[in-house]
Length: 260
Image 1 (tube, rainbow, N blue to C red):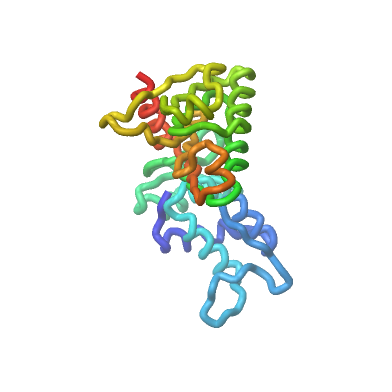
Image 2: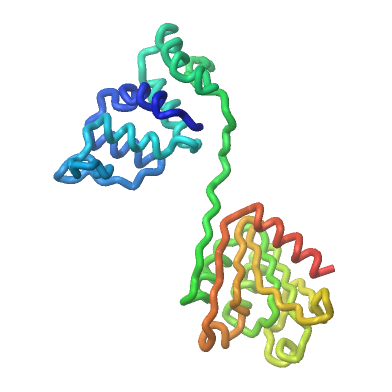
């Protein structure tokens, strides 16, 4: 929900209500802020004179920060229901909201802001890691609840494989596809213990050089890191852990393509 600064300013008195400074900080922390109220008062909002803000200044600044996000709608739905209900008050809210293409309706005694595009998608979170990679992967695998798909050029790390085997034995849908070459045949883990595909060559006739894992079709682990002991203990490597269902679906589709 995105509002102009004019509309946000009109809602500031309703957001403040009878709240103390500490209560305002608690309120905005529920909607994404990470503020602390200290001995100097409300948190710094980078005022030019470096003074701490008044309640109005703090509330206006934090509300502007969440304008354009679903959290602003949730916040305003909360505060408009704190006001004693009257048709006149609903009209007042609509005077503010109507020019912004929103409006307030009464649903079974609860005031709800409608209009605009409601986007409840969780934000995409990407985490890049260059150290302690094995532990990062283990953590994601441990929290798998539905499925795990692994495509790995070389797979010799028995600790990671044992975690996959453990999840497989718990009923998690685990499937592995690895490169069918001398390294994996001689030194690789025993993928025969789980559903697997051995890939003889890449699409263009070269190596199958992919390195990725998809967990619950929600999380992707990918990067330079083969699941090998050399990658963990000798090489400079990287992974990115992407919490992105759309991206995960693309990788799941690629797993299916490589496995057929």
